[in-house]
Structure formats: structure tokens, C-alpha cells
Image 1 (cartoon, chains in turn yellow, brown):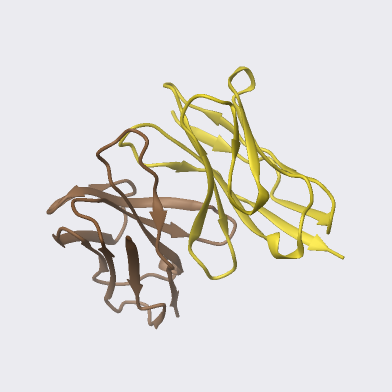
Image 2 (cartoon, rainbow over the protein chains, first blue to last red; image 1 turned 135 degrees about the vertical axis):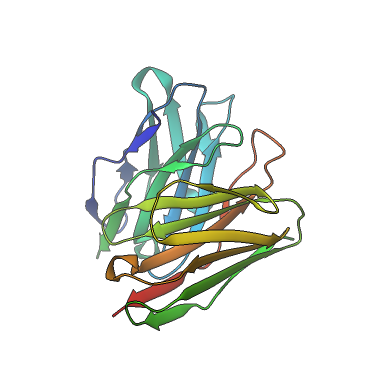
Length: 112
Length: 114
């Protein structure tokens, strides 16, 4: 069965510090992987996606993610966090026309 | 460009009352459409998806139903709401014609059942 695990429910980082959000997936076929961000009371916005090719993908707002097949991971990173990055982040996996399967999310808090 | 609308944005309903949430997509044709529910601390739960008019797949058996009366319209309904139906409801769409299509989300509807 397809599943996505985001081990960290809540992470707090200082503004300007680096960030890594973890995502592990279980998928029977070649996975397509996504990261979304959700601000309070809003819908989800796509940050980046991986389909094939270069395993390091760049997204919007200075985020990047690296696909590691051997570890079944797709961790999201940002070198320097801004206060406006405080939000909830969701990792998702899918393939072809099948609906995406989402992790439970990681809430990011940013402190001064 | 494509846009997705949901209404209402917020809704407060008594237990046992009916529900109708609407989602429409503009700027595309024959999209795949999805309804998700987001309850506190539980991530996104896929409720229904549709690959065409009148075609509905249910992922979770419950007192909710979905319909797709037009190509770009997706409706979530209930005859009698339960307290447990409270949550944030998100509609999403994707083209569905390419393996690499991306899923996009609407702004959501906050439903509170009292």
C-alpha cells in the first residue's frame, strides 16, 4: 500500500537557520513526489515536484528537495528560513492518474 | 490560466442539517477532481475523486456523497451532518492526461457542525 510518513509533527527553527523536513514514502511503482505548503486557513500551494531525472529539485521560495531512492526519502530543505516560512508542509506521493497520498504534515514555527 | 473556486468559504451548520459544498474549475476541460477533508492533526483524507462527468470514486464510506453534474463542477453533499463532519474541505484538480500532471488545490471551506 502507498504511504507517506512525515516523522516530525512540529519543528521550531530560528530565523536565518537552515531547515530540513523529512519525508519517507512506501510505493510499489516509480513514485512521483511532491511538497506542498499550507498557510493557516488556506489551500495547499505546490512548492516543488519530482518526476524523474536530477534527484535534486528546486522549488519556489528558495526550497529544494532531494530524492533518495535507496532511502525512500524526499526531504525538503532551505538554507536560511524566513519568518514567512512558518506554515504546515505536506509531502505527497503518486503515480500517473492515481490520487496523491499525503503525509500528515509538519508544522513549522519560526522564532526570532 | 486555470483557477479553482470553492464556496462557501466558511459554514456553520447544526447537526442533522444537509450540506452542499461546491467546487468549480476555470480555464481547463475534463480535469480530474478531488475532495479532501482535513481534520486537526490528521492530515489530508481523500474523500472522493472523479475522472469525468457522473464518474465518482469513493475512498471512505461515510455519510457524505459527491456528484459531478458538469465537466468543471464538483459538489460534496450530505443529507444529515454529524459532529465528526467538521473540518476543512479542500477541492483539487489535475489534468489527468499526462503521467506528470500536477494537482492544484482550491482555497478550502471551513465547516463547523454544532
